Image (cartoon, rainbow, N blue to C red; front, side, top):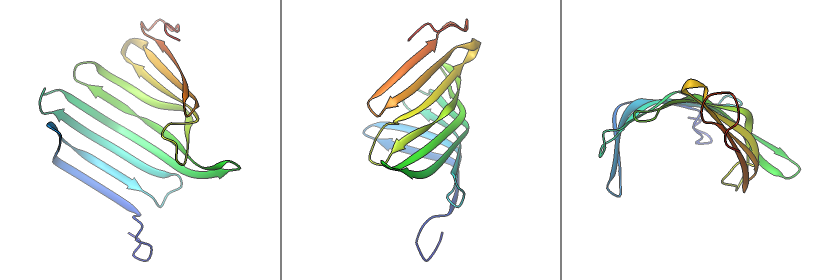
Length: 152
């Protein structure tokens, strides 16, 4: 931590058992979270396995990496975000998550103004989410793995 500005520079957290409870909902997990705010872009990594304590269902965030860079243009401050990693659901299987085009989120907006997120599953299936504005997106999917768009 920078003691002059009270700004966190780097954090590494290793969890052997972390339980989160909220309104009767409970998850228990283990893993590692790392952030380095000294780098430009800011780098975050997440490796985490969690269990829904009510169903026993497992979720795994493996080798997740987030890169975030604050920028500005004539319309304001925005964040350029790139994501990659594997998400596993014990019922549904795994998907690879990547940003084909970095996500752009303007300060004050909840959703990206532009960018493309690609989710690739087993057997060649995929879904592509293209952000057009903070209120508009386009979703494409190949649901049977034949390489053709089945959903638009």
